[in-house]
Amino acid sequence: MESLNRTALDLVDEAIDFADELNLVVHASEGDATVLDFGVEVPGGLEAGQLLAEIQTAGLSSVHTRLDEVAGAPLTYVDLSTDHPAMALLAGQKAGWELSVEGFEALGSGPARALVAEEDEYARIGYEDDFDFAVLALECTELPTDAAVEQVADMAGVGESNVFLPAFRTGSVTGSVIAAARAAETAVFRLSELGYDPLQILSVNGTAPVAPVGGDEQTAIARTTDALAYGAQVHLVVEADSPRFEDVPSTAHEEYGTPLAAVFEDVDWDFYEIPESVFGPAQVTIDVVGGPTHVYGDTHEDVLAESFEL
Image (cartoon, one colour):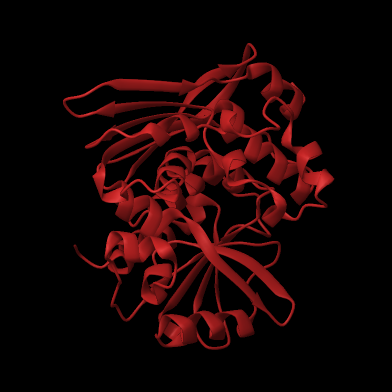
């Protein structure tokens, strides 16, 4: 398959060309890297979030918004579909790069991770990228520092001027859209972690509500996680059956039915203390080609309404 960073770069160029229309701000670092503010010092937007989700998945997904309801209240939903789940969602969209340098903290997603290829997913997929440019989306509360840019360039093995860093806060319109666009990824990631071969997942379509933007990052994190755990629905088509399918939805965790802000507070927001099952989608349908169709989990609009303060 073509380099994920190359195809993502085409979309980054589109974002730069239409920065004004997307309400983005483009900055250059000291080392001439390109930093795109998708929602750190600017509010972000629906269109910006959709494009950034496509950048994270290297153009291997279709991302759209629509209007639906939560507890009778009209809300925006994000739909993401792909016929390349392993590449688009695990090699691309997954937020697997923890960037920490000189006080700057960020969670990185996107195809630059495939240039490093140290996460388990790349061995399972059998993919490692080789390209002269790196595209890494950063979830952070401040724009990337020069030291952060330098570290990304060093780890990705590219020149600083060839680094492109779209950045956004969780507590932004873009952040809420990006979180909702992860519905499909949460199901594919859960299956992979449960031992299912991600290359046997043929297609996936996910949807989730866009959480109201939180007034602080902790509220935003809790609401966007609730949007997936209690509102996301995912349909997958797979090659082989498995007894582990029932463990994919978020109903598999013990705290199910509680807005996750309380769960996170109980562990002092240390996400390593949270079981991975919390981060699954609310409901999944899994079609086995030539076999059964499984349906597990359910959405809970009452919990969403409480979390979203509707």
